[in-house]
Structures are given as C-alpha cells and as structure tokens.
Length: 185
Image (tube, rainbow, N blue to C red; front, side, top):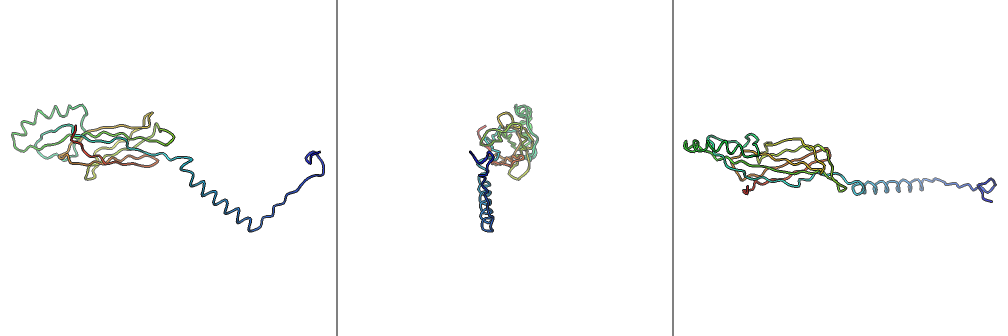
C-alpha cells in the first residue's frame, strides 16, 4: 500500500532557512541573472544596419560660367541634364569665364538584418554629406522584402577629389560609410 492512498505513511520535509542558506540562494540568483544577461546577445541577436554598397562616380563634366558651389540641385539620372547644358558650353568657353563642374552620381545599398534573417518593411533614414559636412541628400526609405533599400542621385561639384559620408539610421541603431569618388564613370 502506498503512502498516498490514505494511510499514515506521510512524510513531512522541513527546510530550515538559515541566514547562510539565504545568502547562498541570493548569490546563486545573482550569478544566474548575470549569466543569462551575458547570454542574451547569443540567444536573441540584435538587429543591425549594414551599408553593403556605396560608391560615387563621375558622370560627366559641365562647363558653366560663374561659380558652382557643389550644393547644386539633384540631377536626373538619365543624362538629360548633361545633354541640355552641353549646348551652352561653347558660349561659356568663349567668354573666358568658364568653370568645370563635375556631375557626380552616388549609389548605395543599405540593409537591415539580424543573424536570423532579413527585416522587411523597416523605415531607414539615409543622409549623405559632402566633405565640408553639408547634407547633399536626405531621405526616409522603407526596406523591401530583401531587407534592403537602394538609392542613387546626382550632385554637382567643382572637384573630383572628394570623400562623401553616408549615414543610415533606424530605431535599432545606425551605420555610416565613407564614399570616395571614383574617376571611372
């Protein structure tokens, strides 16, 4: 006959909580908590923002009269700006006050990921600054199904020896990358 079916074979267990045992329980709880805290990044990896591609290339040269500051308008990417302004270049060169202005195209790809996969439909703010720190491009984009945003734009500059900085940020952090203008265009 077992002790649970109704007999008198009940056993009572008494645990005495002494100050020493309470201290051991507290130390064990603290060690367990610290251990779990240190394991969190491995158990639940944090999402990250990665600048996978970023480049700038010279798309052409525009000869204009006067001074171009480099903070010119965004340019269409189909080359229509170059075709429209190249017809006026002869007149400006004849005046002797011609300035070479380079058309620089910047292209980039920024991705939101975790080690477990991509993060689609995330809002990412992107900003590109010229070497003097001026913002030459800013936008807020939403990642596609692959977890990435892609963008490109054109700007005017007096120099081709430039390094732009791409900043990307979202609710989980930020990333940046330097972009050197390439003469291959």
